[in-house]
Amino acid sequence: MRFNHVANRVNPGHFEIVVDMFVQQLGFVELRRTERAVWLRQTGANVDLQLSRSDTGHRDADRDRSQVSFLSDTPEADLRRLASWFTARGLTAHIGAYSDREFYLDVPVAFVDFVVEAMLPELAAYDIVL
Image 1: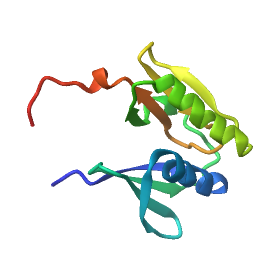
Image 2: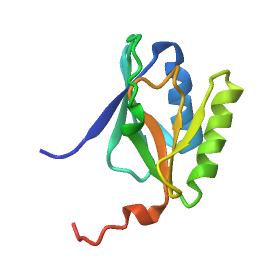
Image 3: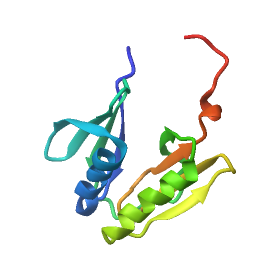
Image 4: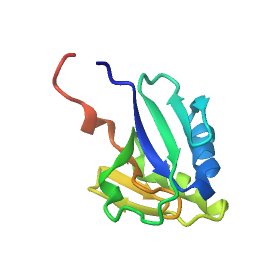
């Protein structure tokens, strides 16, 4: 088997705003769409992100342990920019930190089971050859 995509759940009432954020702000391209889901890929990546509409009234309390993660030289500033983007569209967004090198953005009303993480590239510099 070969890794293809990961899937996360989004509140249907805010689904299009979340998709727009990935497309407009992070350079993702829409690959496929059904009534309940969309598949996205960021230019240059080889793993896709599926976002599925979820009507669940329960938001995972520990969703900060499930991330859609990005590398950035300025992770906190980049997430603050995304938080402002959501706020301008009427959605409350929160920034948190795992450390001084890795941060996360939560939009509780929209993200069901994940947050958007940004971390310094050095955290993904592994000493292995694949």
